[in-house]
Length: 410
Ligand SMILES: Nc1ncnc2c1ncn2[C@@H]1O[C@H](COP(=O)(O)OP(=O)(O)OP(=O)(O)O)[C@@H](O)[C@H]1O
Ligand SMILES: [Mg+2]
Image 1: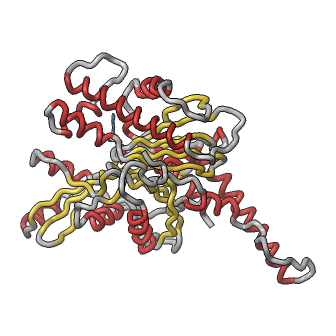
Image 2 (image 1 turned 90 degrees about the horizontal axis):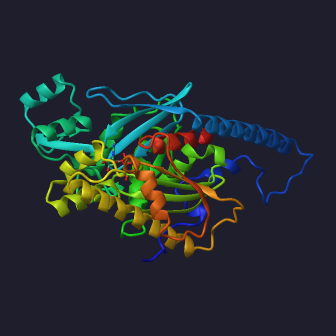
Image 3 (image 1 turned 90 degrees about the vertical axis):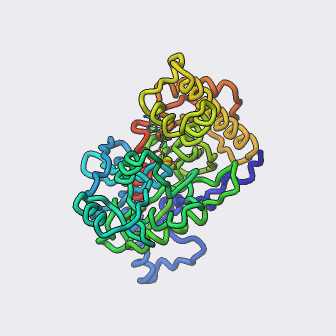
């Protein structure tokens, strides 16, 4: 395995916490004449800015301690006018939008999926009457999000996806348009020009030929066109920002989603090492499906329907699920060992650091125990104090993105 693709320089990171923390500090390299009026004004402005920034960071840290109230986007419900900085998790399975609302963080989730049917005037009328979200292109109706799931169930088939393995799906010609339309179901154009929106980005995949640059640029351009000031955050770092406030944002954050696993070693909120592997819940569904001769969708239903890793398997599907869960966790930890051993960038941290797990793939009972057991099979060159499961694994990335958005607000 080559480890050339993981990123360990903060400057290369998609996210900019360093910029945030340093914004407003006196510019280095400039000569300062303490007597000049313009310099005095500049310095007053500078210190006001610094105070504002520190306040923003305090607000962000406070927000990271709040609990999340989450809900799914209702079919036919219109998008929200955002009020303040937004966190947006653009994941292979779900898109989640988070906002800071008083005592809680509120998230709204949309399924990142679509379904096409032939267009006709009659069907259009029925779709409109039933509040189904769709758009028309080339004689097809593109039905979006949770509505698409209903159609797929009716036709006894699968929805289509805009993303695969964490990135825009190259196979789908209309993937970008559909993803934009799905984002439109969650957020309206920004009322305030330049409202900060922080969106999640995968780390560079260690095990695939893909790059995240195209994906990031497309999302960045679209959010800009909606009047926002987009800032990206690495998905592993979002896990750290959401869960490790009490640990000074120092530790390893891992998001295990549908399309991939994202890993970030953060030191005082600075992402020191980030990378991804393009295996996640979809990999488990597909591999189990192939192994036991069942459709991946059937496997997914079993997996999400209370599958318990701590109990003996009841049938072939559960046996295979156990095997592929182990395989995924082992691949992930092996990659972490390889990456950490081959870098000289590990900060000298005097005490052991926590490792926190988020994303839908960590949800089955017994997952933490499986992870801890598998950790005994690798030798990480960094001491781990404990393994934790995030408070609300399906909303962690959006919450972490929103925490960063708050601190980036100007
Ligand atoms: N209750 C559950 N038990 C087990 N697995 C679940 C459960 N709920 C969701 N999942 C799985 O979690 C995965 C989706 O997780 P999540 O929403 O975190 O992914 P994502 O952020 O959309 O994807 P990614 O980050 O990989 O791009 C799917 O594989 C899904 O089957
Ligand atoms: Mg995710």
